[in-house]
Length: 226
Length: 213
Image (cartoon, rainbow over the protein chains, first blue to last red):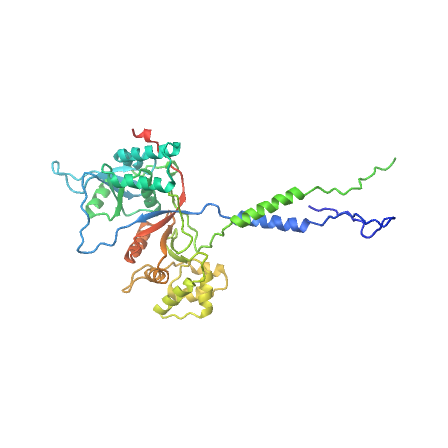
């Protein structure tokens, strides 16, 4: 970036006393160097994407005299996360009245054909309703500000009566990433009602049984998820 | 004509456009930049589809590292006139009967997240540089509850006292144990913070309705 400066005629006066028109070059090299340096510094230190957050709301700590709300057991879908897998079963962890057997757990993974499919099938009506609405907004058929769109979507969830009530439970060996994944699936599948609850001893037994039935550590490719 | 004549003019290139561009970019980056706060640990957050932005102020951040240690930070944003960090330190110091000098209180305001037990906090503040501090922050904040509550519980308690508007965010590594996260969530619930954020990265997931029709 070196530049040879032509020496402008400083004080040479012309014959007729005209002002000398020497070159007005200023050596800009140091300034450019500095600008370059600062530019590099800012480019490297700048953080464009701010981290996002997902909001979760937990119920208030149980008081002794307040009973947990009763839920319709046909609607309940239980998901137990364990070892990078999501085990699910319907209803309650009680023996069936007819066969006297505990419900069996089905293993699913976190890929798009795994637990998401189960959730989508259960939540079909609400999902399609909300999806249609967002598509129409995207296509411009419905013109609403973003706040009202969000409000409408929330309203859909509130009014919904068909979707499942998902109870998320964590087993022994659970990573935080799995928990976020499963809560994220709730958001993806537009599940209206879900809660994180503690696992019961009966469910622990069921989980152990289901784990024993699984083929010994089939190499699940983590990269395929999502 | 035996000698080749060397060109007399200087081999200068007009750098004005380049310099102009440099300055333009420089101005752009200077104006848009927001510095990443230095954190006590490196945390790889899991990803989600959520688009909610992290609040910039009044935020209690609970970092959970890969090795399941808990770190604490409270951020009051640009408005540091309130001196909430020093107020918090003074309060918690009174509680644990550790007195901090005004100089230490002031220094604490400029620092960011920390993960040292109360007894070592003074040394941590007075450490000469960041490397020493990082070396000290291996223990995390104790979460084991004693009869009066764990230190983390006290930090959250006093943080809420000094800044009632403060929200909480858990910034966990995706490999950290759920049990530790659960413990932290329980503490938050104990302190009546039932609504909080989980810091995540953005990702896009497309689900088509026709797949399930």
